[in-house]
Length: 123
Length: 123
DNA sequence: CAATTAAACTTGCAAAATGCAAGTTTAATT
DNA sequence: AATTAAACTTGCATTTTGCAAGTTTAATTG
Figure 1: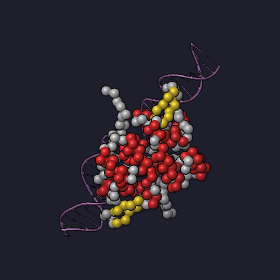
Figure 2: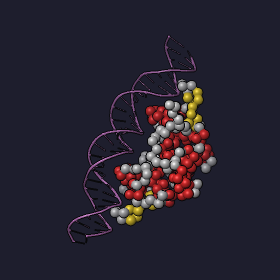
Figure 3: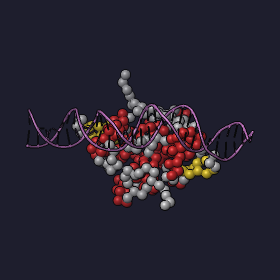
Figure 4: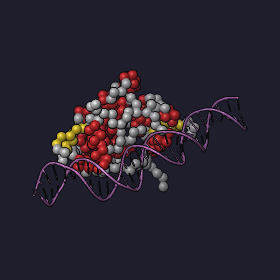
């Protein structure tokens, strides 16, 4: 039996917000998406080097899950996988932007990083 | 020493997206915000009755944490706390909307619920 | 082409978060 | 005063995460 666009986390409800949180509602998934969307990162080791310090097993788990749900794909060899966002993944851009706007308004994030983010995100 | 707008989860980085995920990047917080913002729920038992089935200890934990970080407050008696969003909490509305739009586009959410959500969220 | 390198991935175990069931506490109501 | 029910707690099993140290395997190099 071929498995298709698999439900990785059993849905908790039919609410669109709940469904989306079932996909990316953890502390790491959106940061990987951010790396792909804004920071030009595309490989395992690049994700691993992000300032937040994801650990290898979690990173691997998330790359697998994000691939399974169809938010990212990869090309390249097994030795050097190059990840990229699918159309579905790119459609998370408005989410990332609104999240960033909120963070910019309320966090005490350091100014140089903020400038960098603003520039990259057209905020 | 008076504690102020406390950092509930130690920040992982100064990235605005990361900071926001440190506040609401779990499977339940945004659903409580959703209940307040769109579903007219304001009390412990109303949140508890949501379709996703949050358990009592987690609900209590999140209400405390969301209050601590300044996203919600409450009025009313200890016996019947009535929660509401702060200005900061209301500023999550664009996040909820973009999350909902994404969910509507990609989830197989049931149509009647979608209509309900669209109406309430002006999508 | 054998040895080396390093990117991708795994494993084992401790710590933390979550889920679930059954409590307890305490203001209101009767 | 007794009852009710909303808010909250506790204990314990399960799951997820964090961390450190691996292993695997293509590509590089000497």
